[in-house]
Length: 324
Image (cartoon, rainbow, N blue to C red; front, side, top):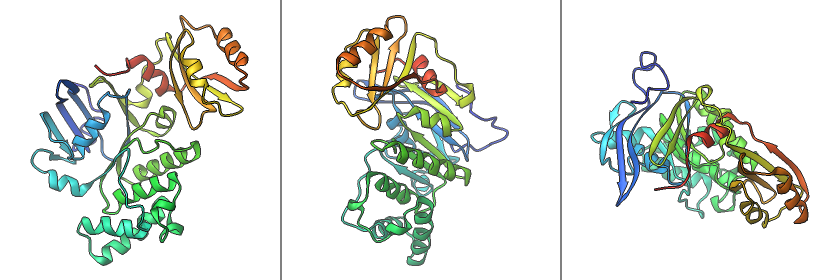
């Protein structure tokens, strides 16, 4: 069994406790008898390739999926027996949250508070507090649909905060945001954790998770391949390495050009088509030829540097990518 991130004697009732949890969709096994514990009051990252089981786990913890096999406790309650009580104390934000774009920010939060059974006075107080927390006081009466993408993400976080949950679960909250908005979002989550809430967040932007999280769980093909403190992450095995490529101008064709080069394993566009993450197999890549290819393409390269973020390197060493 995977040990908890923190000594149980220090935190006798973890925010999340999972034992032998399995889940399948038809013939595909999304989770394979996993074990993990998340201490109360921490910012915990959940990472893994597409199809690793992250969203499945988050939906189970949020009571949106029923358990098929295993034991799960959330805030000390059995998820099979106390799902309604858990919902009152948990806030969940999906990767693509559904929102009522025609409502103002206040109307949206007022509706969410009413759904949770808050009185008029309780809702007014809660809304004032969460708007200040997420920095949207000036947009109280603005229609949600007119806000920027980053501001809409903040509205989403405000929605899950309005009933003052103890555990916050965010599935890819930074998806599609520019670097500044992503950084501000992670800083906000760090503040929520420092304020006593437990925050569980998944993201493909590993650099920011590595900079802000206390601990992390790495999933691969439904299995836990690492669960512990950020400082306990293993280093890279040396065969795979992650590089950051920055261009002077946007270039949509660079992704295909890079993906076809020998030794390039994966290419991911970051905040724009002028910034790319390039995963290379160091035993096969010829960086001189790669840069020459970019120059021949007419690309103005601003920077091409190794990303030595600890979580990025551990991710490459621990995961295989893809799904079964």
